[in-house]
Length: 72
Image (cartoon, rainbow, N blue to C red; front, side, top):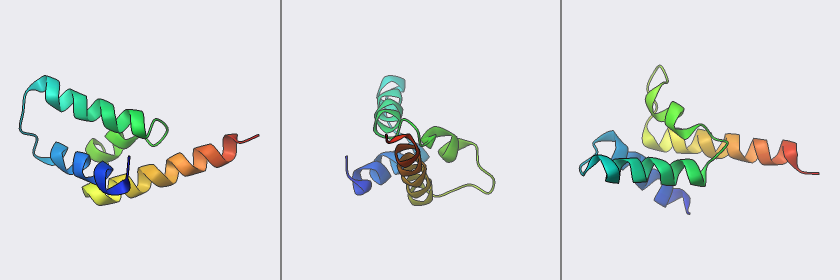
């Protein structure tokens, strides 16, 4: 999934329109794409709040850092 696609999904969660299942599906897609990035925590539990772009950037950075530290 591209960075732009991740940002679009994160932006959707800012003002979700759809069923609870559709919203959960978007959350699941983000977590599957960034399993070590803590994307949902970044979107919902940061102070000050992060924009969708900032949250995705940080999640990508964390994901990269995790992969770099776990390469053998």
